[in-house]
Figure 1 (cartoon, each protein chain N blue to C red):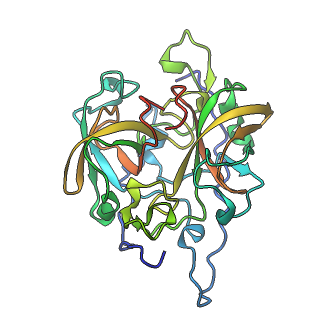
Figure 2 (figure 1 turned 60 degrees about the vertical axis):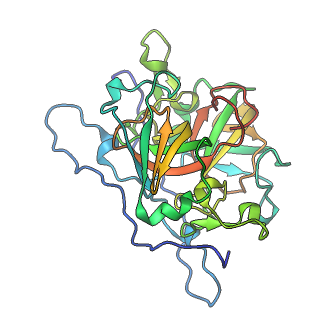
Figure 3 (figure 1 turned 135 degrees about the vertical axis):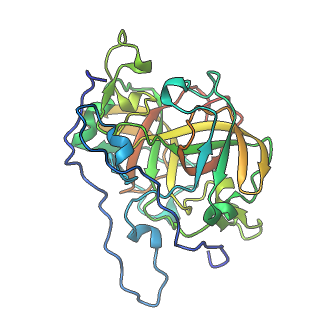
Length: 167
Length: 167
């Protein structure tokens, strides 16, 4: 990573409107909050380190458990076994100061902007994983294949919109 | 939205390891930071409100400009006109305290967990948009179709991995 470009860390934060005074009307909570992520769950996997993780789920990744936190469990209602989901993770080991990488860590490939790659090193290290639901036990979904390592925070789950093999 | 379930706001934040002391070795910045998002850009669209936005890009959404902030512009290197991208946005008007919704805002459909829907109201209101790059002008990409409204923060851009029509 020594050859990667980095950016000035004096980046902008979100411009978020100030919290409105209570006016008797409904307040849009989302708009008034800072853009701070909350983990809604965590990956429990046999993959323990980045070095042993495949670069994409389809490249030999195992199944894993997605443990959803109690506060968010109601959000799982309607998810069915066999369904395809997009799981969004936070690559907590990713580097946020990297803007260019050699694709697939191959020094023979020219430095490329991170937005043109799937590198886990990027300003907001969010991972997208298309997975199939294998089974469900209360707050836990058995999903796969998924290359995220053990302990990776999960920040969102969405239904895949088509039966495409990947996205 | 009055019939939506809400969760206790005393949710967990990310468990993030304490910042390591400088030890002469490289420090993984990503692991030591809080899970705070930084906007890397913003959507400039003719859509000005949620009420006029289609629910999915493929449902008649317009093209829009994605303006990338100066600090992150190097990350665009390698993106080409005609390429398909996944744009990740932050639904800044989304409600983060909603766990169940009527799919597609149709009261006839039963309340469903937000993780089984594409509702913009969810604990981490992240939007996924599959778009085509129409043109590029320095830090600005013309992309579409995209249903995100004007001013929506962009938090990541990734290449789509296949030519699937959607994900």
